[in-house]
Length: 299
Image (cartoon, rainbow, N blue to C red; front, side):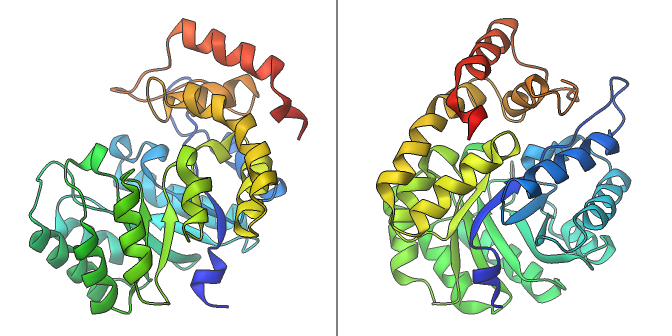
């Protein structure tokens, strides 16, 4: 099966659970993996921003990839996040990380340095030439400080067969439409924004890499599948149920918001590593109220 079909649907940008002492809670991670697979997601993305990668050591990242690959046990595809603003270090990670179980790499565009479009192009071409797995670009300018422009995305898509798609989280529909219109047929465009996933799929995207699917895997998967099958009335019904959850989940911080939801579901402890802290008491109360009243829990 081509990777564009393999990664069609809902991917979950999985969180990293922590124990109260701050260590990684592998028992909870295993339980969460089972929960999201059993509820119909298509693939798992490990070590994304939602996994709090900026505060994980390299050793911890390797341990998480090993654990996740074993826990998934080939039931769904695994994508591993490997990116950064030091090209040499990313190249080293591509060789050092255990990628035997992975089908692709998700690599965020370099942050903080704010490179030019030429710098972004050269960075990704270095990665594409060295990576043992195909690469999904990741454009998230709200975090990186620099947009990966449509022209650069299309240039990369045509320059390397090892660059097979993009997670687009820029929120610019005109840029999304330009990429979808002019990209090669093998190139996949995936939504990186839960709240925009349904209309973006209507424009031609192949699915979403979702934060909300940690807490609501069945609902997200159902909504995405309806949209992919052009059943937009049914997709809207589910998306309307999810819309308030999106607002609450991203009101203060990601992944603090989704961890608050997962805490209410008793899937994890509400522990994050600084500088990210749990959501405010007021927001936690509103999330608890939502969970008590929402029809999502009965889907």
